[in-house]
Image (cartoon, rainbow over the protein chains, first blue to last red):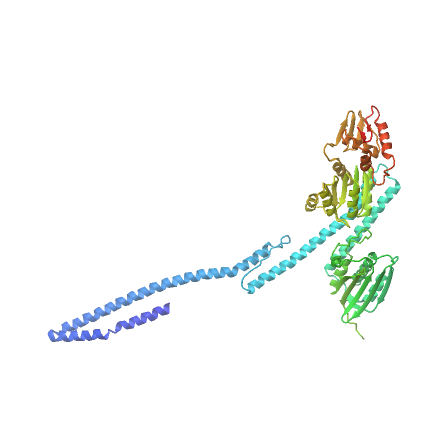
Length: 366
Length: 216
């Protein structure tokens, strides 16, 4: 604006000092006429008056033009500045709004309320990426917290069973006017069994919880040796156990891995039929060490196999068995913590086939 | 009063049965939902103590089925799930009452008794002349003197009192005062009624309506 002003001023100025040619010619003519008639003074005055009149007019026009230019320039500047401010405000607002939303979301997200998502729409820019990442994080947290709450609810639900047995036994026997000693012994036996049940349940829950925190003692092991230890001292009436234990080196926690094998063996025996078999095998294939346990037994519906690994789920006929549905959950959890997998497949003729795969440890050959 | 206990934990189921029998009820115990539905088809129960988490047929389904059939038995749902949503759900399924585990046994008894009393014209305390039958407290007295009755005798008296003068057949007495172990062909009912008559004393209150049954 300033530059425009100065340029215009300059051009106007320069135009003032040169009187147009025609007018100069006329002035000369007038001068000539005045000279012929009267004195030199009159012609000179005439010319001078005229010239000065022209100059004054030009000067007046110049200052008027410049003044107008100044005013209009300033107005224009002000208007543009105002527009710039408004436009700037709007643009900044639009850019900052997603950031506000993310901040709000971060503020409202708490343990109780993880269900809100930002769901930002708009161009796929860095802000959108930030919002989407934030949403993904909320999703993961939500799942983790829900899983935890579910677990606690299931655990407390499960613990009520032994408590109820104890309470009912005691209430019923003590309500009798004169309980015989057999009745008292029967009550005491019920209470002891229920206490055992509760203890084992709490134990299993603690292992599961500790396992999730992944505090494992790590040492070089062989799955064959672990399986052998687990099989030692087991007596399964009416069930034949076949073991084919090949070398299967791994790195891991001895106690946890033994628990894994024990749980699988428990399951294999518990859900077996009389006169059935359990086969245990360990081997190393390529980069994986494999533990394979197959048991005969009732037919497991294929859609139920997945559910077996969920905490506290059991197959339908719970009457005979006294597990609490955590056995396979622990197996899966221990396998994961060791960087491996546990899979179960239902055998069409009946029974279950469980395969645990863990990363193979490189055996130093010295 | 005849009660069916449906609970899959065998020791617990048996204990509940034992406790209810001690309290004077005639009790049958089954361990899964399918057997429960079978039993209710064969026998008319006054109250059903139903665990929700059952094998074979889930307790919720049993409840819904019974509600749909318009069974006369009242249902008391028993389960470890104890929060408000679960209670509401249970009641909406058609249960008449809901008790969370673990429970105090005398509360179970009181609730079962309360449920068994329900029905038109069956108040908690029935009076007939100088005979007072307190169904809630399981006591009876005549002319102010308390009567010592066995469980079966009280059961028969209670049934007759609740009938409010209408005759009650021997079959009905057998069904509601005895459990599944009773031999339907023996003369247990006759014998019990006779003993009850003796204990009630003079003037005689129980009248035999030939070909129909007994009434107060």
